[in-house]
Each structure stands twice: as C-alpha cells, then as structure tokens.
Length: 217
Image (cartoon, rainbow, N blue to C red; front, side):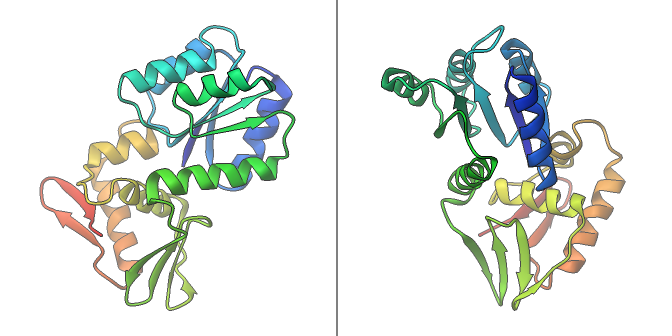
C-alpha cells in the first residue's frame, strides 16, 4: 500500500514515515502541497495523509481539486485545527477522516486501516473466498483453513492491487504503475503473478489472455 504524506513539520513527517514503513506501508513524504499535488499525477497512491497549513497548495485545496477531477482515493487530514468550521471544511473537501495533532501513531494506524477497509473492502474485516480461504483486511494477510499463506512483499502488493480492483481486469501496465511506478519487464510481472497463483489453493486469480488478471467476487 502506497501512502502520500503531506506534512511540513520535519520531525513529525520522519516519525510518521518510519512508523508506517515499519508496519509495511510504502510512504512518500512532502512538505509542500504543490509538490505533493504534482506527485499524485506521477504515482498511484492508495491513501493520502494531508496536513492543512503547508507551503504551496494547502491540504483543503489540494483534496478539493482532486475530488473535482474524479480522484476518489481516501484521504485523512492531520491538523492542529480545532475549530468546528475547519472540521466541516475538511469533510466538505472530501476527506474520510480527520485526526487532530498531537496524536498517537497507533491511533493513526487504526484510522488508516479503517479508511482502507471502508474504501476498498466495503467495511468487511474478513473477505471469505470460500473453501477456507480468508483475507484479513486489517492485517493484510491471507490464510487457508486457518493456516497463513506466506507471501513475499511483491506478492502481497500484487494481491492487494487485484483486490483493490476486484471485478475489474488489471493490466500489466496497471501493475507497473501501482507497484513499481516505472517500467518492469512484463515477463517478470507474469512470473510473480504465477508464483502467487501457485501459493493459493483456489483459482481466484483468473487470467484474461491478452488483457490482464482479475479477482471476481
């Protein structure tokens, strides 16, 4: 899961980045709203963490502009603002949550997990594929008959992209953009996907020849 973090306080940005990376997220941090806005058109993010009062474009304007352009990626505001009008402004601009500074990083983790689960998995804690195959949307783990299926980092990311776009065909180019952010030999991507499919005891990942891959549920 890729997170864009907009926070102009250096030490807080570093603390959040290190914490999230330790629990498995990939984080790109920015101190300037305009730079963060530009990065969104270069990288596919799964979540935005946005401070409001930052140099360049402020967090409210950034998210409001994205929403007008049809970008629905979930966003959480991180701010020291306490005025109820600011809170209303945040939700009107399109955020799914609002956390006031100072906050505990564990609280941030819980809010992130909730936002991702609500947006990508309809609020379900466990996705049941039948025949004992379960995906935990809070722990980001896959199990079969209560036995964890060990996946590499890339395999987890591939599975996550397929789930995020469930019932839609995911092309090789989409995997390139959302996981690597650059060109990767399509043959290497197919090898990674085939390795993942071999680890799952059910045919939940379907190959649509010439188009890509899909999970239907």
